[in-house]
Amino acid sequence: MKIPKIPILNQIIQILDDFFSANEEIIILQQKEKLLKQEIEYEESQKRFEYYKEQLDKAISDLEVEKRVSEALQKELEDKGKHSTLEIYKEWLFDNLQKTTIKYDWRGRGREEAHTYFAECLKHKEVVMDFVYGHLKFRPDLYSTADKMVEKFNDALSDKYPTSAYYDSDDNLYGRMEYWATPNKTIAKLLKGKKGFDCDDSMGLRYTAIYYLLQEYFPEDTWRIRGFIIDLWTGGGHAMLGWVASGVNDWIPIETTFYDTKDYKIWQMKYRINHQMLYQIRYSFDNVNEYKRYTE
Image (cartoon, rainbow, N blue to C red):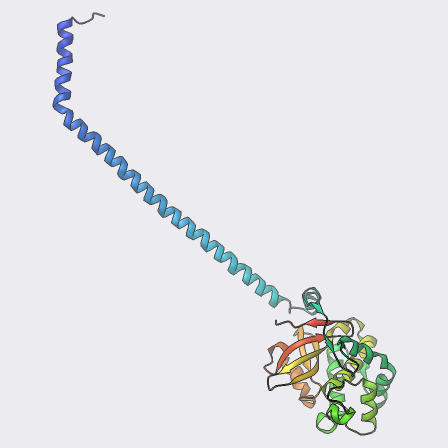
């Protein structure tokens, strides 16, 4: 290959110099336009990035809200599900209802754990069951379920000894402002045709009788009976029983004095203790423990 002579090379260089000189402004402008375009594209990319970031943050936030709602819904479903069967409710109750210590001066010896009252009541099995079988002539063998047996026993006791005829205050019965009589003392008064109980005395008699009836005929169901101390919306305190009714799978009231002869309506309507305007639970107890108030 021949190398061009110097004059010719100079001419080529000159032509190129002339071209770039003549088009310098155009080239610079093109470069500026290119840079501007790149800058605009960058800004648009930034905007898109911010937009997508905002959408992503919103999506994450929505997911977190959805998760919280889902967890709340799941808890609600689980809470409602606890009433689906008797066994499930029993398991929930034993796992969630906290034991506590609540003391009360129920017999004038100073404050004692409330469950000691039922424990003392259960010492009078012979007197109570003689009263149930011999005096009331109650036939537990006629009933195929614990629910029906408990319902019919309460009806029998309330019909024989209605509140309207046999209720009296502790002051009149025992000369004390407050006294929870054991069932042997209550029965002794009733068998003499005297007024024999207030709400807590009736609670003790009913608990003892039901406990031993269950122990004999439905021993797996003794957990379903419990005493409740409540506040009344009209004022004052009240002692009653609660029974975990099959089908409801929750506590329904066994009245000790209020509406005692109409207790069958409560059983028919399946009223829950927690759903009553009349009652505000303080605590519950059996013959072993006291339990904290629960609100569900």
